[in-house]
Image (cartoon, rainbow, N blue to C red; front, side, top):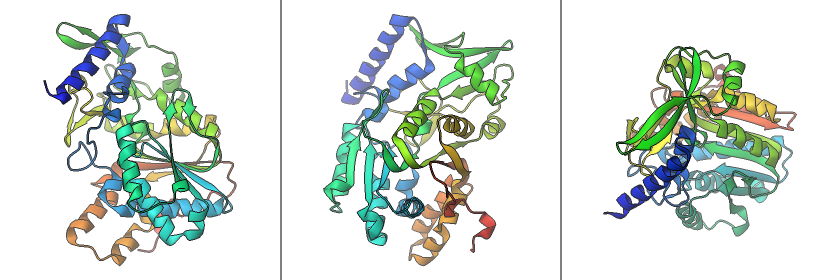
Length: 382
């Protein structure tokens, strides 16, 4: 048995053991173990996840312009907040390229901001942390500029900050509960196991929070219609607000408002697996070797944010966001070959990442929260 197959089997045994103790577990419990088991989970292993040899691409991997534009955004936020000490908290930095591009650009273009700037990487994967350190060491960043911390069920391991929480494709990978309408009754999908393998059970919901969620958003599921609810996102935003004394939250991910999600996904929900740049719905296969994600319900994030003191600054498509920050000017002023130009265009093109990815910005204790990135697209000179 190869090392990879051994790890997959050990993770499978661990999940089965948990199922046998309870008889069945929620899909959220299954997803949490498959993705976040401390040793064998997809996000805590030494597997190559991002890029050509991984399972998917992310915007920071496509081109450094993405990180440079976010650096420009952060510098504007720093000025709005009075040019005081400013911390950036990045959730799950992966290979570290976003952090690398942001810090490198700020040091080069905004020296005064750099002097007041600190970057916190929230990372649980020891292999990823090692890669991030090596990458940042290559540009000789001051030791006090970057620190690593953790996030758990008890919250974050750092003190309160002034600054910005930043996440790119973090929320979509948080465990979700799967719900379904059956004979006009709301049911939850559970996972069980027998000699034939994993199988699903429809049963009563595990918490009444789901009915409150659907009622608040005025969502009525049709017969056999499925949806996912991400309670972990609400918990995470609560901890974010606890640690953010003053500043912004930038959440970049694929998804939509609740209306958009239900319009595009009629009955099957949005849960998908990504493996070697292919998409599947084989949730119980390749445990620890493939990603499991669901579209982000940004309406839920906005509503939860308001309840914990995070006001909505703006919500737009990634295409609008990057164009407002100057991606077209950057592209025109950079001598790039056709291949590079096409890569950059993928960041904002409607048929690439520009349409499906959205940007939600929230703020706390900020009076003047007018951001260049949120201006009307008609006001932008092409």
